[in-house]
Amino acid sequence: MKRRNLLRGLGLGIAGGLAGGQSVLANENGEKPWNRGMAPLKITKVKAIPTCPHGIELIVVKVETNDPDIYGLGCATFRQRAHAVVAAVNEYLDDFCRGKDPDNIEDIWQTSYVSSYWRNGPVLNNALSGLDQALWDIKGKRAGMPVYQLLGGKTRFAVDCYTHASGKSIEEVADNVSKFMEQGYRHVRIQLGGYGSASLSESPDFKNAGFGTQEDNYLDSHFYLNNVPKMFEAVRKQCGEKVALLHDIHERVKPLEAINMIKKLEEFRPFFIEDPFSPENMEYFELLRQHTTVPIAMGELFNNINEFKEPMVRRLFDYIRIHISQIGGITPAMKVARLGEWFNVLTAWHGPGDVSPVGHAANAHIDLAVWNFGIQEAVNFSETLQEIFPGSPTMKNGFMHISEAPGLGVEINEKLALKYPLPDKFNYNWTQLRKNDGTPVRP
Image (cartoon, rainbow, N blue to C red; front, top):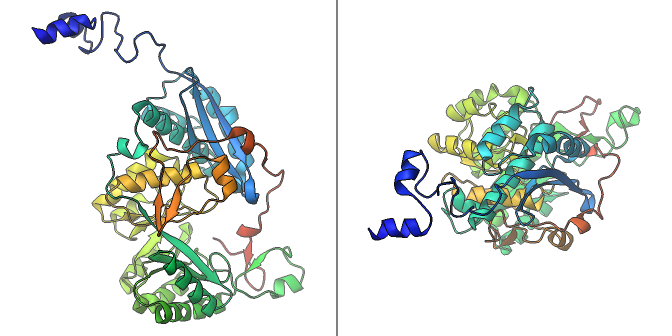
């Protein structure tokens, strides 16, 4: 009796509500108590906010609603095609999403995913990621909870990370690992020379012949293959067993060369070796498994959410190395993580400097929630980036910590962001790598 009187006092009719197929929490007009007197929430605008501090193109998507206090932010950064992503967001997703209910994240993701008919390209997937992450940000803000709570809550107190140690010599690499250990890092990726597999050689024959451009990088695969095992040996000797060592082949040598080198690294107990083969050479993973038990991370170049399904089910690698915005955001990434749990594949989301603080926060929210978390790539944001993106994740003793604010916890100073416009042209040098005779090398 008391419950019935209470519900009547709230304007809720039990019999009428049930008879009409409505929730008992709805009144005779179908209004829910938390929405009564309010217009239904609708998306009014989806826009890209590009910014380029430190010469790195970052793209954040802002989803606005008919309530000016409710909006969301998501990462759509694809610096190699930044202008194309901005156009995809502003010219297509904005019109497609206006008037939709931002609560319906799965429905919006699925319909946006097929709205171009042809899908899975990195430009459209990054645009979709910005939208998707922003919708999760909105849902967290409306719930008054960090996004990780909506994904199931914490399974760890913070996000364990690895950092990068490189050098022009093996001795310099080992010294840098020691320095990171003093800062509290327990996991360090070691690379000799530049990022990935580029060697230290400076005068290849293709440049002397005027082939390609003078800015193109050079890969001396013989130098690389011979020196990586020596690097691991030296770091182990100097730094001991308390640090976990990682390495990125970056798909830049022949598959059989990668397999032979990984076999040599087994005695140094790598935490994982990343990206041994390009996406065009996935069949070699089975052969790799037959010859070594070194843990393998793969997936940085995956775009199609179907690319990793069979390899994960067949346990061909141990860590899924997806760039979350490249596959479309938090919604598909959570599905990948849940699939991995069934097959003992752990997460190791891609998290370089060309991911916005909003994107790093999205990585971390998933990291906190999923049981099969493996490791996360560390990032230390500059004062400029922290000013543009208040609430950015922070690092302490090798752990990433995030804001406990509702949603993803990161905001954006739009006026300051616009002071760092995207360049009209893009520097392609990072992707341009050649052998001594000038043959292009695929990452």
